[in-house]
Image 1 (cartoon, rainbow, N blue to C red):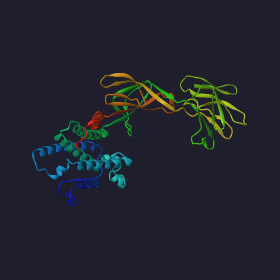
Image 2 (image 1 turned 60 degrees about the horizontal axis):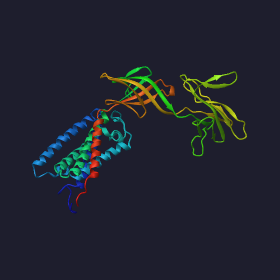
Image 3 (image 1 turned 30 degrees about the horizontal axis):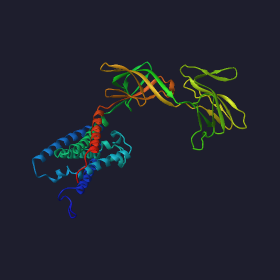
Image 4 (image 1 turned 135 degrees about the vertical axis):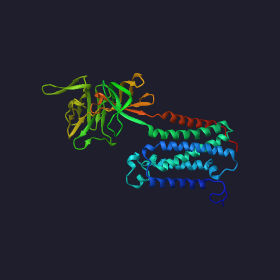
Length: 424
């Protein structure tokens, strides 16, 4: 581009591209100001319809270019690197707004005060700037891809270019579809019961699902118990680093350790126990029934003081906890054991007539066709003795297409790595 070239004269480059990009953004903001956010039901359908129109338009443009020698500069611009950079910048800028602001459903954004709400910053996917930038990027991606297909001479390098650009367009299309079509349901099941209804967040009426699940058993693994010091006036006693002092009971008995100035010895520990009252004392004995608690017999001493001994327990939904009182308003306590992993042993039935057994755990969902079933929660009041489980059923019919787009991008990147260098 010559130094004295005026705008819109000759070949269109980055100057014209930024003007076009700014104009599209300004028009989209005006639409947003006048019409407000797009209704939730229109996304992604309106965008997909627009994408189809873009596809047809691209095909028409490409066909026309093949049949004529004189090409309008506006059409030629769509096939240029400047259009690619400008369209990607616009789309990434609009997407960045979504990442920097709290997003709410479109029905909540309608009628909310404030400039950010009105201009679509808190519901970006349902705003005109997002749809405009998305369609602009899709049009340019398809145009530059078709241009490279016409001039397909170097199989590896040109193949990588086509896979990257076409894969990105494919990924963006189905990622937008997935964001609206995804279904999420919560299902709460009690041991021995079968449930086929799920709840959507914010709604009270259950929805019948094509999957029924019977809970056979709920199991939980816990981290080892620990002992801590509690100050009656200040809360948990903390060490030099600001973290609470604790003694993890994970060693063979007898186990000893220090909690600040106190020396603690554990000479007995029962993972499943219940308290038993004698004539003047309370002790814990093994008890493997529902509601059992973890208990430990400890001897606590400090230099210059008489040792104190007794039982401490973290309690359960059935048995209250027990602490050991020390001097200086201090108490030795055993907090609740933290869950390490929990499992739901289930039997599933599908509408098609298939059935089977499975174990669902955190980070290990069950997949049935398009459905993913995740371990979500349990009865936290009962803890390890919970007799119910809460599962989340998620269906995303477009996820395979998203994976296809990612695979295309990956293959394009691999081809770029192995492509021969270009001749200078």
